[in-house]
Length: 409
Image (cartoon, rainbow, N blue to C red; front, side, top):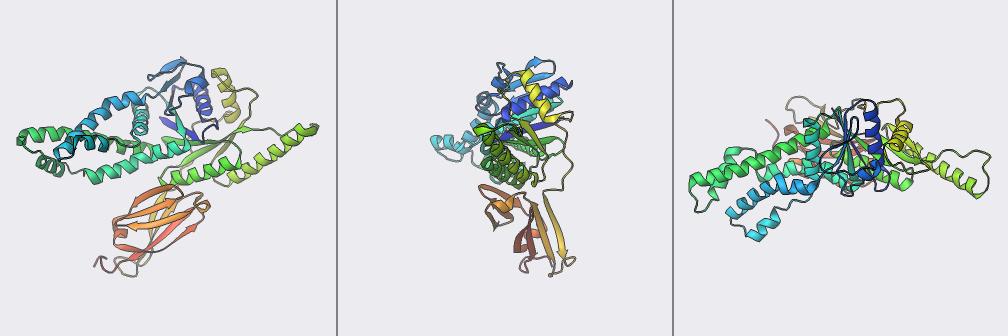
């Protein structure tokens, strides 16, 4: 089973390429589902089909759907929200305030991603192709499972007995048995959310199972955003396994003269310059030529996909990459105070934007441009202090030395 997510700046053609990839896979006798988490829901337009929330078979092996986040909000999340309101009311929080506190930013995107995972694990598909929203929304979407998982663990620790005892103490005038039964249902709902978040994190981080494709046009502004996206995804431990450059102009014939010839030659040269910059990102690169007509419908999408992939497998996993985060000892041994450790976080493109580090308790806050990640430090580094940090190519290297006040003795 493979899950491949397509994203990119709005208007670059990510929906078209997601649909084209799915159509090509279906023609290769693979059962494929293409779904849209983009609120714009233009997938049906690209496929020239009316799509709903349930997968519809458009032709042999090709299924498509729009994820209905409204229905998801009214379902499982609505039940959990009700439990949380009761929890807060039991703690003495005003009903209106409790309603506001249970509105979780990004929950629609989270539920959509959960639906993708459910389809991948329970459906008969060999491949699930996902048409994600524009880059900014996708970054928030892909970063949500890790962020919310950490938040949930802080607010409601996984130790079930401690949570039950705490909640029972907030029960007010209810009998102990009624209180425990009610709070048990709340904890069960929270446990279910925690399990879902853990499953989503595992799916996204599994490079053999999940691929992320960035779609862009050969323009310097778009390429700059793509580099920032690569860095932001790497910061969350996610790897992009392919770039697809859309609307590439062919080289004009030498016989073409006049203003049209000059424009095509200048535009082609500019696009080739962007290609040269992208080649240095160490990510597999494919090109889709600028078509004379907009590719709409399965036949036109197949033609586009064949020009992009040729005879290659469109969703083949990329070669394994080293772990995005590594910790190693660089000096000393055992519990010696002269020990030194290095945390290495791979961040392609980090040198292009502002980088900031902050130690917050047992976590390291890493901020690259608008993206931030709280890196939980291994236990040995929790007893150390940061002594230096530097960028070495695509690697952020943070050096730690034992803190004599808390170091192991």
